[in-house]
Amino acid sequence: MPWLEIFTPSPNHSAAQTHERRGVCFHHTVKSFGGTLALMQTPESRVSYHTVIAADGTRARLVADEHIAWHAGVSVFQGRKDPNVFLLGVAFAGDTYAAPLTEAQVASALDWLAPRWSANGWSSACMTDHRQVAPGRKDDLSPAEWTRLQARITQRFS
Ligand SMILES: [Zn+2]
Image (cartoon, rainbow, N blue to C red):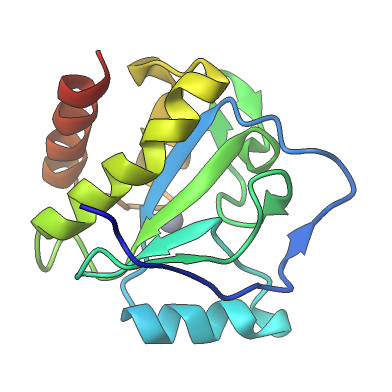
């Protein structure tokens, strides 16, 4: 099923260097889809994701893949700091502790991943979430929802 994708550019990004696209860091936003997009349009927030996925599977693209979105903050992935330059940021609207990801969100995320997976030579080891790259500082996704998403990714792409 094709998912609606809208383009709502965020000023909160850097184009000074090309994004390395080594993998993906998943997030949840706590806020609603609309509330998240509004925050991303606000320069003062200094926060953005490449893509945000609504409960109905609609995706908003905020920052082009080749540019640096500001989603991970002080984080480390596989021993390397500043994942913003090498992990794309994909966020699910909502709070995965309050409610699980919708089936549409999971399916839309897999659909978003599909063309990028082969193009960038990704594996399951290239996938992570904010909780794992910033332990103790960030808690998204909930462990249960991360496990569920990871299983679906592995099922689809391996
Ligand atoms: Zn996050």
